[in-house]
Image 1 (cartoon, rainbow, N blue to C red):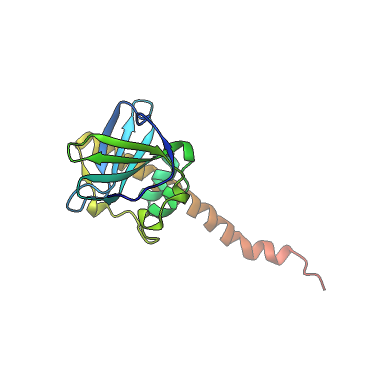
Image 2: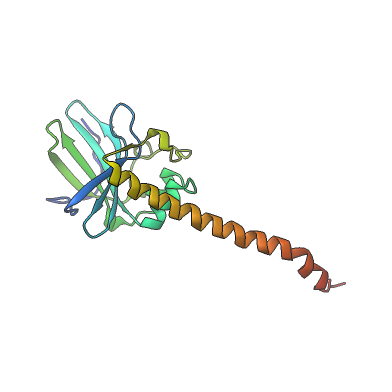
Length: 175
């Protein structure tokens, strides 16, 4: 039996018309499926528990920039999940037939600690499985955007550092 978790019971998961893009973590089964909906919402399903008849998933809506940060290995999975707003986080219990039996709106920070990934859970592309070439291309494009943003930030930092000696020489030192 799965442990009782506090949350608001819902009749349905309020995510419609979702499309599986990839299993971002796949090891003997999907552990972190990534879905998109028609409205361009991004959703992660994180497997967090099971008993003899159910699997429990933490379902979260994430912002694209936060997902890109995770894919670029700038943010851990735990950090990503803990930043999710309450209105976008759910616990979903699914039976052996794939049917939801309980849906709760939850606060991620209030979940048992063992429902969250370890602090050092970074994205590892070697554990990803893509649904098709289009999905792989979509995810790769998102990762490329993240890398370009990171490169731009590094260039800005580099410009600041190269100007630092010049600025320090002109700045009077108080005595």
